[in-house]
Image (cartoon, rainbow, N blue to C red; front, side, top):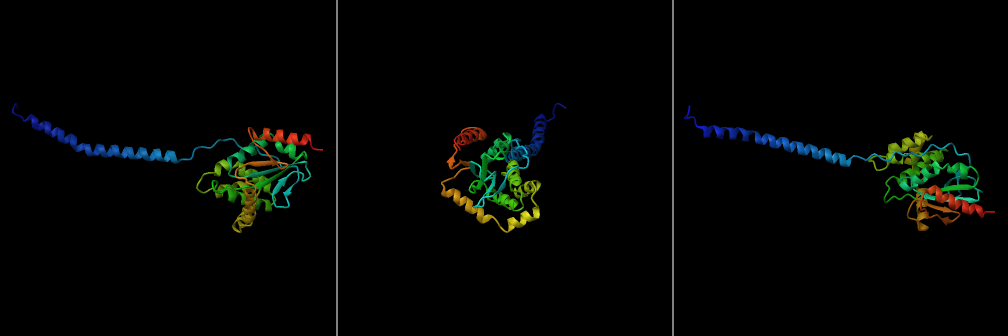
Length: 246
């Protein structure tokens, strides 16, 4: 027994341990690859957007229609104050403007009271907002069905859901339908590019005025410089105009 070649046993144990080394290496490599994949997926997954939503507005109890140039408006055309908004349905600031006005019940205070006519002019920032043109045309097609303003609000209310996703059109159309538009008529209007030229003309008109950002708002031809809450800044400017209006 004392002549048992112990070194040989030691070498055998070393060989046995080494025989598992490739397995452990592969196992570790697989784990690293798996964790890397999960990490990359996590980075690519969309971050949950803010949950703030625009309050549902009641039906506008005021005149609605289109100006002689074809821009949609709400409020008495003879109102002493005309507010012209240049905006983009994919613009976060434009959505915030809608949110501030809705929370302050702006329509009831100024539009339904006959003080303000609000005119919306499309300025789709197509170079940075891939759905700006599309949503502008959707809103106009909805206008052909008599539901321009409900769809207008629905597009802003759903903006956080369809912005920056790969295929946003179904969500945009769904928002329009929920606001009262007929899907078949909407799709026919979009396929025919019924309002493409009008949106392009609106864009060109805004650019000719030197405008390159949204929202841009004019009150009786004077441009508003927003410095805080949209509603507060508008209220101050509108009230100042009203105070000197005969």
